[in-house]
Image (cartoon, rainbow, N blue to C red; front, side):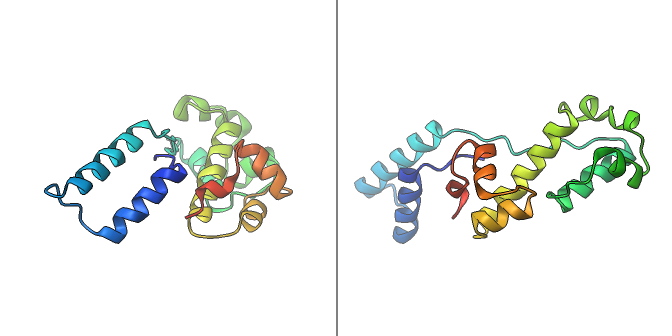
Length: 149
């Protein structure tokens, strides 16, 4: 996924009003060149979420993907999905992320999807288990509004 800076966003919207760019038009050629330059310079965001192979750990992962705001204690969740805390220690080996890093990334991916769909920052923050929009913004490090369409 690419981060779409304001200039790139405006350019994409402008291209959509034009329709298909035609290389025989010099202005279209320049627009295409600028589009390519901006896309190459755009920051990439890793939104891949590796999944654990163990069935019990996978049940926990699916639970967090479905209910990202679940604040239930890890020991209780492990018991609910039929795993022990010891079993869940396999999470980093299978995913490359600690359980908490994985959970946070799952929450972030879920939040980005909601924001891109037009859900408000406040509703998204509360749905994803944050106490307030401010806490949500601190987690992102930037305004989550940048993911809005």
